[in-house]
Amino acid sequence: MSPRVTPRLWMAIPAVVVTLALSIVIGPMIASAIAPKGDFVAFGLIIIGFVLAVTLPVLALLGWLRPVFFEQRRVRGILPTVLAFGPVLYIVYCIVSSKWDNIPIEGALVAIMFAAIAGIGEELAFRGVAVITLRARLSEVWVAVIPSVIFGLTHLTNLGRSGLATSEVLYQVFYAVLFGFSAYALRRVTGGLFIPILIHTLNNGFENIVDSSGGGPIAILVDGAALPDIIFIGGLLLGTVAMILIVRDKTNDPGPLLAAPRIR
Image 1: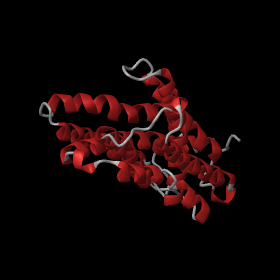
Image 2 (image 1 turned 30 degrees about the vertical axis):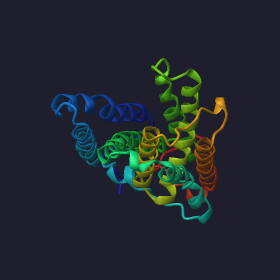
Image 3 (image 1 turned 90 degrees about the vertical axis):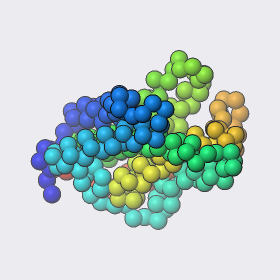
């Protein structure tokens, strides 16, 4: 099915910027204005509701809704599928290591909800609209690499943030790039955007819960690798290998929505 508006390469940057702005700028501004003071659950729900209420109709109007959320051609190989789920290892670690008796239910809900804001907004941007716009002209390896690298570089905005050393921010950039590769692989092997959103949300949410429960946050690698680092980075490296296997197999290349010359 052809889209009403054909995705073009030049649309990638504005599409990503607008999608991110909805979840990290406009949505929070609206939530701050109408959510009861101190009600973080309502605050998060308003942001999520706003993002979905705006993006879903616009994507449907453009004819992009299905290609953003569903792959044209799902990768079905056993090895890339297993490797793509590498990030789940860290989520399992967080579940096991968290001191659940110390965590109020509302606190856990808020942690997951705020993680969902990032999970939905960032995956829609980097593994959603970026994928279908870059596919208009670029080969699949660049569709995987470019959004992941840019996703990692966006974490440089944390430089100068209180309590974060430069080395920690650079570590964030490193693992965010790897997570981008893994999320791309998850999109390809699961056939859509839903599992990447879920894994992204659980990854961020359980990290916050582990921090708050004293279970041990992700350590900074330059200060010496700890068990969380090994599990976290190890899982992301598995996902990265899955991405490499997927883009190397041209038989699984989904191609652009409409035929167009491709740059390799």
